[in-house]
Length: 88
Ligand SMILES: [Zn+2]
Image 1 (cartoon, protein in one colour):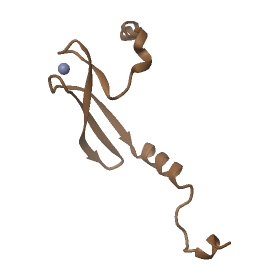
Image 2: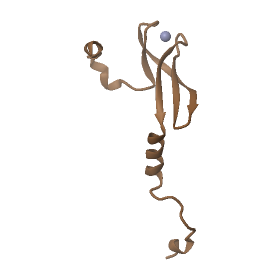
Image 3: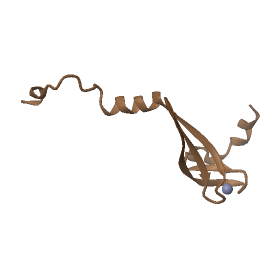
Image 4: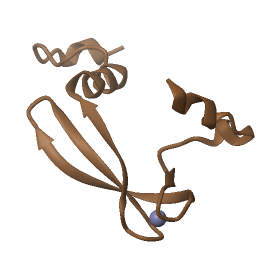
């Protein structure tokens, strides 16, 4: 991949979704995240440059990633109501 070579900048650690390189502005610009499309199984976000409002990138959030987040939040789903389990 040839494009890897030009990404050897010292501020590489600062690469986040909130700032992407814009070809029109010729610089790394802060971006706005916009929900572009909702599909069964995934959502697609569009990143717009705050300088010129052109699209500088897209990101997919898959169902798997969302499930991962849910799994982290609560390990088990609600099965049967067992309130007495919470009693001391
Ligand atoms: Zn721009």
